[in-house]
Amino acid sequence: MKHINLDVIDLRILAELQADGALSNVALARRVHLSPSPCLMRVKALEAGGVIQRYVALASAAALGLGLNVFISISLKEQSRQALTTFEQRIAEHDEVMECYLMTGDSDYLIRVVVRDMADLEKFILEQLTPIPGIEKIRSSFALKQVRYKTALPLPAG
Image (cartoon, rainbow, N blue to C red; front, side, top):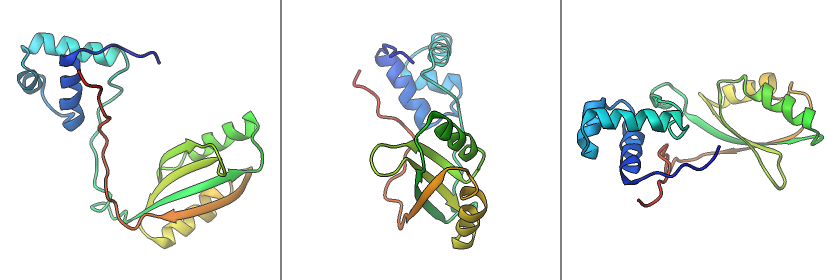
């Protein structure tokens, strides 16, 4: 995706929507000091340009009983395009997997998984993860405490 030049108003719109994606257009326009029609046109342009990808509701993991946040490093036996594609397709099938990154260095992939407890983690690893072909090594690290969690991206200075 190519870089899009954003002006100060676009950046204010993005900041407001990253903080509260459920804002009505009228409330958003008021916060960024525009009338509703130009504000809506700018939001639509940001959506069409791929700057705004989607709107979501962020649920509380704790409220849903998902108390264990685990980072799992996964090494594959081989680095062929087919092996990577197969792993990525299979890992994307699991709702527990919140993030998946292809890494450099010692591990091929880093995934973040949320589960209720150790029993669910064991079940996920044994029944969902290890059957994926090509996995050589699995290493888990547990988050003891969430120090910071945010979804809003840093925006350039306007």
